[in-house]
Amino acid sequence: MNMTYRDRLSPWCIIERLPNLQRSTLYRSRSRSAAEECLKVLQRFRSGDYEIVFDIGNPQREEQVDRVTLEEIEFL
Image (cartoon, rainbow, N blue to C red):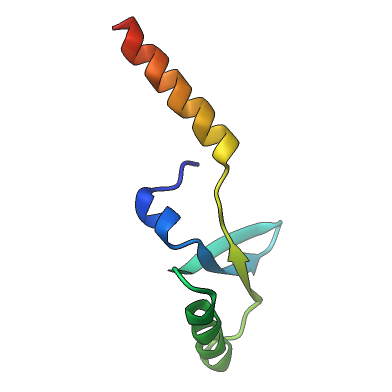
C-alpha cells in the first residue's frame, strides 16, 4: 500500500489493534506530542487497545513501484 503525500507529512499514528493481527489507523499527526494528547482522549472515552506508532510506510516497495512507472513511461 503506497502512502499518500499527506500521510507522509503525518507519520505519527494512533492505531487500534484488532483481532487476527489486524489494525486500524484512527489518527495521524505530524508530532508525537499531538498523538499522545489524542491517545489520552481516546483512552478516556473509548475502550480499546491503542498504540502510537511511527509509520514510514514501506519505502523499498514504493521505490520499486516508482521504477516500474518510470520504465513504463520510457517505453511509451
